[in-house]
Length: 351
DNA sequence: GACGCGTGGGC
DNA sequence: TGCCCAAGCGT
Image (cartoon, rainbow, N blue to C red):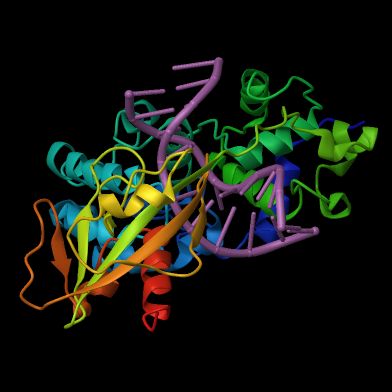
């Protein structure tokens, strides 16, 4: 079997690189702000999901100084629907640090990038390599998979991370480290995929230990996951006759931190629907709507029962809550699960 | 080092 | 359908 060669990957990248909104033309340099913004959005998130958000953010805030000057609420609203909302909070905090402490310019040094909020080992290396041309060892999920297969690393994850990183380090070229990193990621996303890898199109096929063994999908080796627990709760959809909806803001940290929600019960594994109406935020003629809302989070599945009632235009919002007017409803920082609740209630308004 | 943290798409 | 996973980070 041949030794793998970074040159063959760079040649492949020059011919097959994906055209992405945040990616500069071949040979051109990229605005570090654009690289940073895209990398934060791409954390655990698919390219397809990121594209429209990336373009929206660049339009709303073309520079890191503009983003730093924006109210956090506006950033949370613009991020709504993309998930992992602590990223949005850290994004805003990071923009502030870069604007105030670095004169509006991202530091080119990997160790300094690592100090920024929301920037971890992967993102610091990616920005250093892609935006500044520094040699850095860039290891994301794609690179892990490519390297684990190429070198048949048989330890289970995450224990294998050290060996994978060492292998990628030894394999990363001094020049074009940014293109090398993006090439490894493009290869993982389009050829060396988790299932049914297209080995016939891979520049590493003659050098790949996993391909030689015929067990490509065995790598990286993972331990099976626990079953996802189920939780349940109730949401209370109170709508005024002018279309305003009663909402509140979640605490800044934790699940859906800082996002807007319809008031409701806690979500628990032993939710009792019979007692749910006692938790309503105001006295009203609450009716339990038929059906419910199902939503899957990373670590639990949720089923929400939805109660609905009407309120007069003059009704005051209880302490800690507010009315989201009909016209502003679409712009609220609702996470997807809350958009489902609202759509469910509005679709069943006749009940 | 393990866990908490969203959402949507592919098969 | 249920499960896996996606350019990870903070605690």
